[in-house]
Length: 265
Image (cartoon, rainbow, N blue to C red; front, top):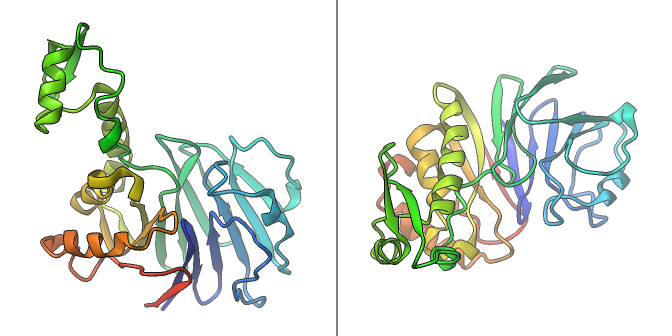
């Protein structure tokens, strides 16, 4: 049994029987109901202001430890902080923590404790963006275009723009971010996840669920909590509609409609 709460945006609290895990919480003085009688591990995936504030060091708890991406340039009290880079594994008490490199900033976390495995993406995502698809493409230059299956061809920018508009090609930069995301998600194949916190993002518009789509194809997760909401919970209706046709998402993907929503498993 465990509880998971989407506190806000990407801040998630996971409560197991003997441990509590807090991910990417930007502390506002609220103690969010964490019990003092179990250890609290506080994770920070990267230094973007919507995922990290130095005020988290003001969280009051008698048995707390911070696990922080090593790209965050702040001074840490070393006795209660473990800094981790991409592709590392460490053990804190009886909790095993592994990191994956993010394709944006910092790391993603895989946390194992009490027979449970939890994945937290941070900013690891397929960041292809609808309104950025045609940016920085010069119609007169030649581009190397990958079809997603390892086949490449060279084409002039004006032709590439036509294909992107018809959804038959990606901006080369978009292709790189897609492939870098998929390379990390592929590492989760064969691993059973009890909970996965996966990025969706309203700013990506029609591409908001690209990362979730690939994750569903590749990862085995009992429960998937979308994160990165920016307070735009009207996206819930769009997510619910998208999920209706996904047999692989049935009863897996949670659809928060507001902040501080708690799920019990």
